[in-house]
Length: 202
Length: 202
DNA sequence: CATGCCGTGATACACATGTATCATGCGAAT
DNA sequence: ATTCGCATGATACATGTGTATCACGGCATG
Image (cartoon, rainbow over all chains, first blue to last red):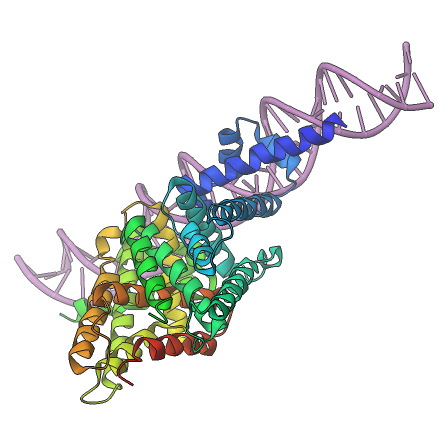
C-alpha cells in the first residue's frame, strides 16, 4: 500500500516539526497550529494524522527516544573494536552530554518533556521512561567487566557507581542547558571524574 | 506605616500561593486566576500587588531561593560545631536532595522554574541563577580545607570535584522527582560516593 | 454509472489566559 | 465637610488553545 507509507511519512514530518519547535521554543509553544505551520501543512492534517494532541506528543517522544538510541549506537561503535569497558562508558556518557548540535537538541527536547511529565502524573509515564534504567544497568555491566579486567577497583559497587555516573551526566547536561557552563567544560569534568574512577593498580 | 507591612504580607501570601500551585500542579497551571483562588483573594488583587505576571513569577522565585538558603543554613548548623569539611559537604548536598517534604517541594518548584527559563532566554536569568556557582565554590573551599586536614587526597582538583558533586546531586534529585528511585536510595548513592571520595590515608 | 470512503480544507465553538477598564468604598488631609 | 488617593471588586476584551463540524474532491469498488 502506498497510502500506508505516505501515512508514516506524513506522521514523521509532523512529529519532527513538533520536535523542532520543542527544541527551539519549548513544548509549551508547540501548539497544534504552530506544529502545522512548522510542518507546512494545514491544522486539519495534524488533527487527522494524530487524533489528539497527546497522541502527537507521545509519538514525537518515541521518535526522540529512537534518535537518542541511534546516537548512542553510533558513539558505541566509534569507541573502537574491541572496545575497553572504560571506552564504552566514556562513549555512552559523553554522547549524552550536550556538546554538539544534535546532543543539545536532544537534551533540550528531553528536558521539555521532563518538565511536562512532572506534573502530568503518569500520563506519559507509560511510554517507558525506563530508558534511564537500561542506561544504568549497561554502565554497571561495563564496570563489572572492568573489575574483571583489573582496570577498576573491586571495592567499588558497580550498580551504585553506575547510578552516580548517570546522575552526574544528567546534572552536567542540566548545567550546560542552563548556561552555567559550556559543553566542553562539562565534558572535562566528566573525564576528570572517569580518570579518578579508573585509577587503580598504578 | 501599617499599610507597608500589610503590603508585604499580602505579597507574601500571594507569592506563596503561587509556589504552592507550582509545587502541586506545575507552573503552567499557575494562572493569575488560580493563584488568586489559592490565596483566597480576588484576581484584581493579584494584579494590584504584582502589576504583571512576570513580576509575580520573579518575586515568588526570589522567595523560593530564600527558602532554600534558609534550609541550607539550618542543615549547616546541624552539621556540628566545629564541623569537619566532610560533614559540611555532606550536609549541604544531602540538604538539596529531595528526601523530605520540604526538599521535595523546593526541588519540584525549582524544576518548574528551570523548565520555564530554558525557553525564555534570559528573561528570568537576571534574577541571579548564580546560586549554583556559589554552591560549587563553597564545596570547592571545603574540599581544599579537607586536603589541608589530610582527609582528602591532594591529587584531587577541588573545583572540578565540586562541580561533579553538584551535578551528581542535581541529577540524583532529578531522578527522584521523576520517580526513578526514592530519596533514600539517592542519598545512599551520594554517601557511597562521598565515602569513596574521602577515602585517603587509610 | 453510482456509492461510499479517504484525504483535505475552511471555519466554528467553547474555554482559558493575561491584562485593562469602570466603579465603589474608605480613610485621611485640607 | 469635601476632596483626594489608595484598596478592592466586577467585568470586559483580545487572543490563543484544543477540538469538532461541515463541505468538497478523487478514487476505487459494487
